[in-house]
Amino acid sequence: METWEFGRTVRRWRDRLAPEAIGVPAGRRRRATGLRREELAALAGISADYLTRLEQGRATAPSTQVVESLARALRLADTERDLLYRLAGHAAPGPEIVPSRVTRSVQRLLDRLSPTPVIVYDASWTLVLANAPYDALMGDTTAWRGPHRNAIWRNVTGMPSRVVHTPQEQAEHEARLVADLRLTASRYPADRALRQLITDFSSGSPRFAELWDADAPPPLAEPSRRKTIDHPAVGPIALDCDTLLVALDDLRITIYTAEPGTEDAARLDLATVLGTQSL
Image (cartoon, rainbow, N blue to C red; front, side, top):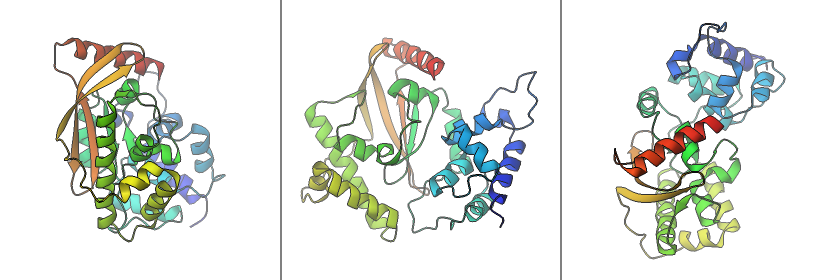
């Protein structure tokens, strides 16, 4: 394919995607029939300038992460997603690679949860997507790059978090995450990127290396946990935190909710309003 065919294809698929399909209000004065460039860029987590260069053929080597993000934002079918990978010069991920795709059925589920803080991770605990209420509650995730997108790395290296943990709770949380990654590594032994991630984490974090080599079994996972979020504008919010596993796609969907009618629910609503306005 010509180097510019990737950008032309993205532009064509952007034009066909109705704003209403992804919850973007069309408005009476809207001229574009599909998504605007800045809207697609925001959905894919890339800059509008980079998307412009991709569409114009001035950037011709998008990473697999960018391709996957664009495919997800454009709501592509499987065959179209595979074509986009080939146009970018990549092989479409096979069953031996940790999946990071969000299928249309899962996306419909996420759309229905749009007022609720939700974050999605792949099986290596690398961020796939976070919705606007999650960013409003926990802080903006759009600037996360490289290992900062991985929940295990953020925890074992002590990166800032609004979640309030006691030292014991934090240690148990880290042990659960690393134990889950060990299971992931056993399911995807041929995934080179996963092996490199584990190597990098082991050399870069003594805490990760300690947990990775530990003989003791990890603490049992809890299906639901109560968490306190220390929000800078509204104060502490006690929330139920539930992580759902999408078995076929090996995704982890974490959802934060509050009991209706409680002070925590009111604080969560306020944090969402304040955060989405600033975002």
